[in-house]
Image 1 (cartoon, one colour):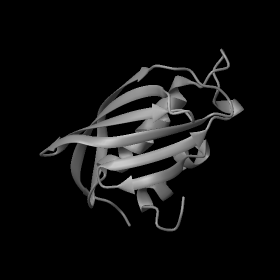
Image 2 (cartoon, one colour):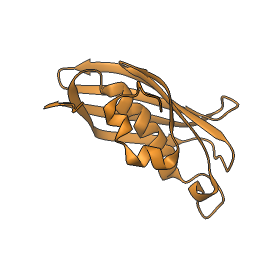
Image 3 (cartoon, helix red, strand yellow):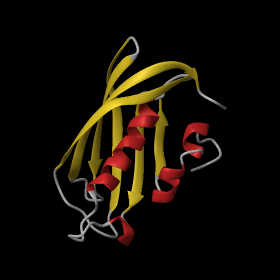
Length: 134
């Protein structure tokens, strides 16, 4: 993360602990990457689904926080399509599908370093009246 990274992500201790890197951070669009570590594997020596979800969820959070109001997840679904393992680089690309009023739908595609789709995530957002802290 660099000096221009938004306060919400600078305060995100979970993303920092996972070693997530912000690649793109634009209103309605985001990309976040990570290298799979040994401590991210499940009992079958593949990347734990919760880790893949966390990567996608972070890209979703960046994409849906488009203005000065706090936007949170109202729900999300994920489909796991390919397993990965230690040393691989995963990148989550999030994009806005639609926003109506206070609700939105965002799609996130997680790919590996070869560009193969690892997971598809759909997040539903809810924009609050709470301002984002600086």
